[in-house]
Image (cartoon, rainbow, N blue to C red; front, side):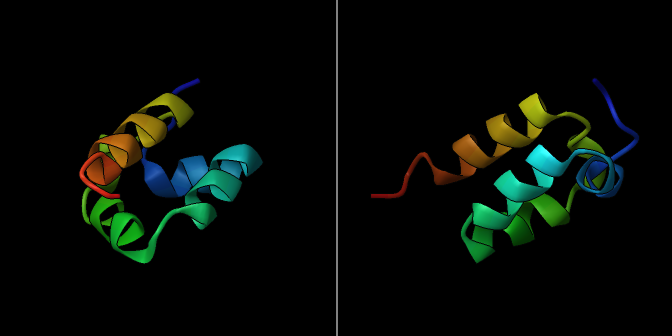
Length: 56
């Protein structure tokens, strides 16, 4: 399901909110700078994975 942006996704989808809350702060900050780019659970997960790929 697609949402208008990250904020709507997090309000409407408890699983997305729960996932977002588990992310490191720097990942949340990066995602929050481009809320229009995140409109589904899949896009949230993809974006977070791209940002954390270089970690560890």
